Amino acid sequence: LRCKKSTTSIRNTTQNQSLWLGYPTMDSSSNIRGTPVGYVEEIWLYPIKAAHGFRVQKAELGDTGFKYDRSWAVVDVDGTRYPEREYISQRKLPKLATVRTEFSEDGTQLKVNAPDMPTLTLPLEEEAYARNDPVTVNCSGISTTSGGGWHLGVCHGFSAGDEATNWFTTYLNRPEVATKAHGSKPKAKYMLVRSVSKSTRDLNVLCGRNQESPLFDLKEALTEEYDRVRFQDFAPFLMVNNRSLRDLNERMGTTKYPITPFRGSIVVGGCSRPWAEEEWATFEIGGKSFRYIKECPRCTVPARNQDTGEYHFAGGSFDGVQGKLLNPQSTLKKAFPKKATDETWGTWAGPFFGVYVAHSFSSRGQILSVGDRISVQSLRSNATVVNHRIPFIVTIMIAVLVAIFSIVYMK
Image 1 (cartoon, rainbow, N blue to C red):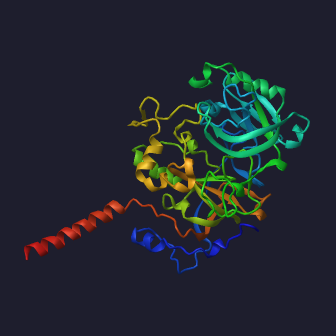
Image 2 (tube, rainbow, N blue to C red; image 1 turned 90 degrees about the vertical axis):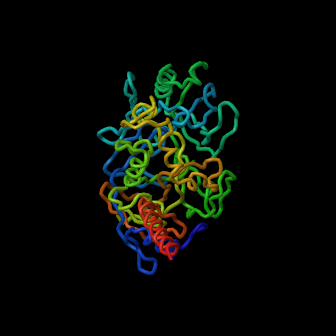
Image 3 (spheres, rainbow, N blue to C red; image 1 turned 45 degrees about the horizontal axis):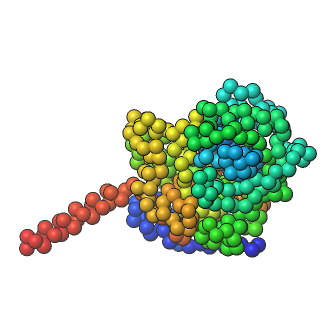
């Protein structure tokens, strides 16, 4: 394999640091393989990019992540309000969060709903779209004002049909749904596009040893030649840790900030430390092999309510705590400034929350379930251990230094 690496031999150089910080540690001299670190608390699917996701008890591991995840995307056909045929993200159209999806009871259809709209029902399997109009989707984030931005390639797919086009055109052109910046423009024709397996995107173009994209400097990423994505921005899965969310809540002074704005596919529970997920190089979930790709730099979406598309801190407060609209991001940036300015992400640099991960070729077709145990196989050599106890330790060190100074001075 062109990007194969012996990640299981990665030497954990963070363990002495971890011990000094007062955390339970997996000593680098011991066999860490199989060390339990948590379990799958939630699994989320997002069939339509940028739309509201839904929780499931189990999901099949497909070629590009969970089966059906980000398999559909909405585009502005003519470029009236957004760049022509670019997959529209929630960054640009926050009210896409109000578009809800679910599977039919028999598991053969995708049901789409939105406020005051009839239910749109679509077939799940891509073969059902083969006779529809072909569409080339630009996987990009181009500014509608300056023309700058980024481009991550294209995905070829098929229109989801006239009924779906009419449904999204009707709903997304409503004044209460459109953004202020685009509401004054002529109405757009919005099309839902179904991706196809033969036109998925190669993750190795974006990162890894054979990286081609000039946007990032991620050649150290542990990619394999079979790593592919559909309408995801970057990697097959985004893994987030509820213990890290608790740490963020504590830092913001809140208790109820939810995990949903971070739009993770896999939510980890039972982890003893916040941010530990950033340390795992290779790991197993329910016996299926996964590997770290890169921490996820966050945009504005994690500040938004995934039921309404509005900012959680709209009005200046949330959960009784005052804060700016992007309070989660600013809190993370203040707590971990080096992470927020990671140069390897280029223009994507931002505060981290969650980790992009990929699965092994052998795990395709297998099932991941809520409750599956997570065990570490190897740790990253350059992971940064985060901890709450530094202030306490620093206080003790200062007290010791003051005592020494006092004794020397008194003499």
